Image: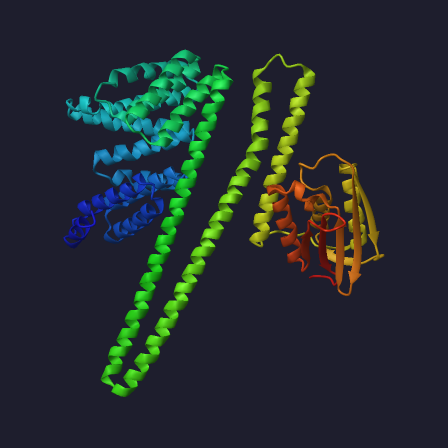
Length: 549
């Protein structure tokens, strides 16, 4: 393709040029190199617009839609498919029209936009029927396309709860299946049949279809993501049959595969971005070197002695710049590795922290929904567990959102004048009501002092230091809280703080520490953790005594 494109461009044979470019992009997509694919598609679209070639423009849109689909960016996929659909009247090749409509059909089914799905299915059928009327021999050649239509008509009527029409199209599918059927369409038909059997509650038939689909995927070397999809169907069937012990391992396996694929794609995209960055840096350095060489050539025309001196100084400066650039590149690479490692740990911990309450919520909700013989006491107990995990999950999500806003300096504050002593008393009172096992002793050497701050967020900060993480045990605990003033600084100290206790260290406490630190930094204060203090885990934080406007 790289050898063919320049020839086609030179003779302005745009059909071949954009066809080869599309094939190159699809090769990148097949290898999950989505950043490379998107860069090539963007260049393809720019080239097509410059030469005013509608075929190249449509091909670029189709490639972008595929990239967005593979990377789960459905909003962008929706917008680009809408642009492609608007170009449909300008397209002459019928096969391209059918391909575009097939993309729209698949997207509409995934998003459950059944009105759009009906429109695209009917339009595709009109095109195929017209082809058959003009050339009846095409009926056999278009069997796969008609099978595709009947599959999605069945999906349409299952989704709109019309069992009679769903059954009609379900039966029509069988007439288009043959030993020559396109293998991905055959698997798609199997998946549709599974959903149809689940709808009609023919669970044994659905289970047999799922096993058959898994066998096809394994025997024909489909991707691991296709296996995960078919295993997910089987798990859904087992769950519907009440065979939870068999369904759970499959769900866990599917989750592991999806996580592995997501991580692999993310890492590969990061590598592609880094490669592009280094390539741009190399081109930039080459440009600088060329400019220096031109200056040297111009200098040769002048005085030879000055040229030699100038050349020596310039070469020395280039050497230093290259050394500095190499050092900066190494530092950037090291920082990138550190960021990747931190990101990986954070995602791993967050994934675990989110799934623990989420699994409890889902698990007990399913028990309550499926077990009709639960007594009222057990149901209340399950409800309390779901409520507790919901609160933990909401707290975690809110903390992550607050941390993101603080890091991006986008946090909104409601600033008022308030007495810092009263603020501390309010926080202590709130904690005493929430955590009666915490015995807080508040000592202050400041009788009254007005500060200009966001009272709610500062009170929340103090409460978090007292209350600690959600995993804190219910044992009795004595906490000493002091407030003093040192010149223009208010000094606050919490001794035996649960939030500083290393026994409760984890993702939740780390996020809370970061939120507290960034919040105080915004107002000009400081935040320090002394986990191994002699008197017990201690947190020291300061706040400016002078009003911060």
